[in-house]
Image 1 (cartoon, rainbow, N blue to C red):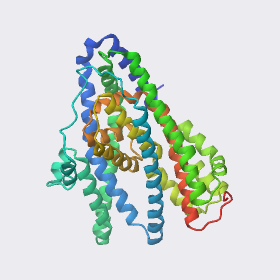
Image 2 (image 1 turned 30 degrees about the vertical axis):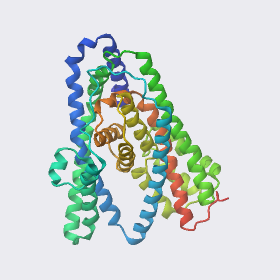
Image 3 (image 1 turned 180 degrees about the vertical axis):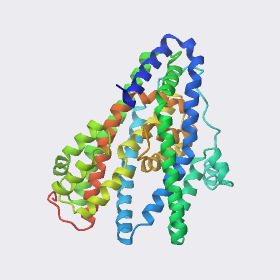
Image 4 (image 1 turned 90 degrees about the vertical axis):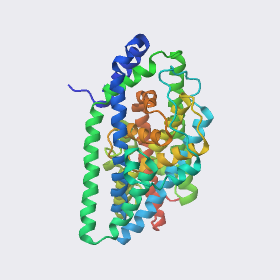
Length: 403
């Protein structure tokens, strides 16, 4: 019987941490596995960003006028809820500071990437050479070029538009296949990374305490977003009874928690939104599938907290602009994360790359990702249903859950 990947990763985490504490002298013999895994994640950064942004923007802009208007409105509301989630995570991680107090061994600590001023970062968004940006994984220029390409593909002649659309969609599917193959080997890489992180750890109990603080920070953030901000938005912004809506969504939310998959909860979500909340099939069948693709409130919050936690653990003080870049990249990565195997791991590597933080820091948080994955999926699905209600109200629909 083959173990599921998350169980393999959990076993790799346990054995890697144990080996790092008990046999630190063996670290040099296995660290190359972690280095290869980190290199593989780095290799995926540019193609994932470029192909996902081009395919996503071109697909939305190529839809009909009615769907385009509905789509832009829906995306705007999804972005709004994700911004609220990211802001919540930022405030909590700065207040609680779960990464402070960890003493990393000297051979693990790596300096951040070469420091660049705000002016250099802003001017560097427009690359002198696109292929140079690709080869060096300069994320912001790749995002800009992807946006411009996706924006202009629908304006081409039908023949060229179809050819390029198929090309970039095929590129995205190919990238996803390669990603899946790399992720299959992730337990080996994570074993080596975690062993390196734990080897020579001066205070193991302090590390465990900080990990619990990290889990608590994310959990509080997800709870505030799900049970405070979204209900307030529904009640005072759209005149809807939030408790009735939450009660109607109990089945898809339980499904999301049990499976840790927005896709697995999709049928139950569609049924609950249409038949219990009374939202029209037109709005339901557009907003919910789109939300399961681009709306990741919980993921955006978690990634933002995780990256700042890693920076705190390594003793790296982030500037205001670096923090802003983390928030912005968390938003962009959350939008493009659907369909990516082990999306949290890949997204985190993208965000760490933007601000020059060591990718080895992933080993600090990957062990608790499964339980957090279940909770953030609930926040993702609930955010989808709330936006469906908001869109229905802006379309003038009368709902059974109205105040």
